[in-house]
Image (cartoon, rainbow, N blue to C red):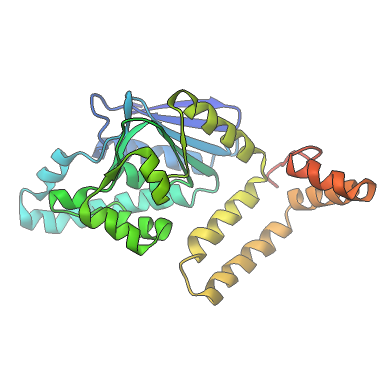
Length: 280
């Protein structure tokens, strides 16, 4: 691949994005990312994905404005072809979002526009502390966050704060983004990848069908009316209750409780004595 370096460490796969000098997102990068997502969806040996930037100080700076300007050069052609391109980008990020694996964005630098929209499609956003910019500044250019930002950001931080971000076209330091709820954690730069890997290795120990079911229940249900959302939860709970992992782990917990209830509670929460999840 030209733009992505893929590394495997046990059940954790890291995708490092490399498009010098600015690490802009582009159409060719999007095609490679779509290919990687397709491979990961059916990869039973990978349980967690980490996305990070391969250029110092840059996760993804933003989507290439040069590409966008070229697409807008002929208004009639833009009106005909751009919706198709945008729909493809939306489909790609939706597939990443509902991937039946945990996905972590390790934001190691500037992360704006399409770069932050990519991070929004991940389950977790861990940001390196430093003189970096995070946000959706598209309004400054006379456009809008068209890679899902107008929909995912309000669902993450609420409508009022999301409008503040997008209408002003604000960008934030990692610490400010954390206070806004735009990232989960801010980490010292030297510790970012080790922290992300620690999270990934913990998540990789969770039963994969449980991870997938929780993600579907949240992403497909949380923005519906309550009754519809609870129906989705019931369906996911029914399916995951019938898995081999659920039976094995719950029986192991009950056996531990029979010996010492307090110790069982403490040990299981720390992962001690929990049978290895098989994904069945």
